[in-house]
Image 1 (tube, rainbow, N blue to C red):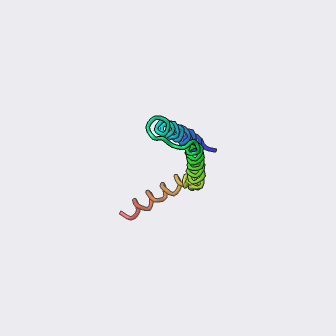
Image 2 (image 1 turned 60 degrees about the horizontal axis):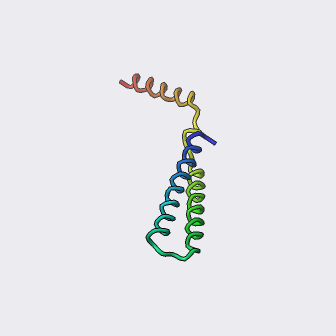
Image 3 (image 1 turned 120 degrees about the horizontal axis):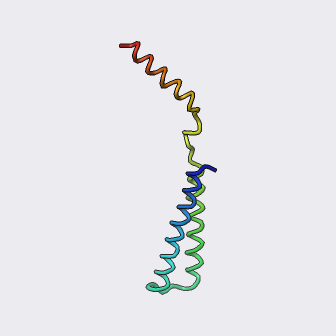
Length: 86
């Protein structure tokens, strides 16, 4: 796992934790709900966090697919071909 993926998961977990706490505070202080609602709220937050995390992990990062040395070679090759066209 890469560092940016780890940071994303930690950040996502912290954000969802804050949203969960705010929802619990709203349900506890201002909105009267049945006790089962708290369980659904918690399950919803956990499921949403897992869905977003899995979606993010399935995104393909193109930077891993190319070799930096090969990229450098092609950039130099392009510069040389542009100089010769002038």
